[in-house]
Image (cartoon, rainbow, N blue to C red; front, side, top):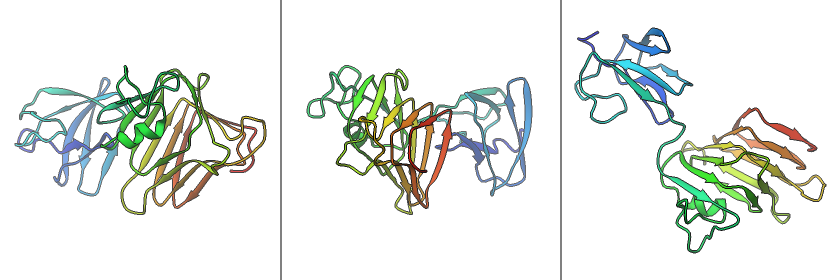
Length: 238
């Protein structure tokens, strides 16, 4: 209500979370329905939507958005899949030496683009092509193909055992979000190498992808996977 103000805000993962209030009801509109959410200091409500509409604010305007005033008006809040800048990679016209990651001057390798990222959930857009490189991920990033798995191939170098290594180091949160790739362990038809190793409290989220010809698909040591709308074909073991 007006005396209470905002009970919730948006964290870096686009969850509606408590802003420090206890036992507070705050209205949230999803589509045509208005939900009154009771948010306590130990709760978090995950929202998997493009946007939500929320009403009210505290005196500091804390809704995860700068410049929000105290108001009873409904505010529409977009829920994007990332924060931070976007970088581009092209196998055909990119350069790791002279590229800066902009659309007109992309990097050639995904690793070079990742090494340039600075903020959690920076996004790397990968143009169509074949990328024969390993990838080491030690901070959160979004990796997306621009044209989908049929034209964007990630090929494991034959001298590298693990194609993609995601390491959280048991401390910092590390999440790799991958969307829209075909991943080859052995383009010659054999089964070799590991697709992804996720370890030390890291998380890999793989969507809309094809994984084939690996000796082992998913390896983990205290890591987690979420797989969505993906096909695993002609592989060895998980």
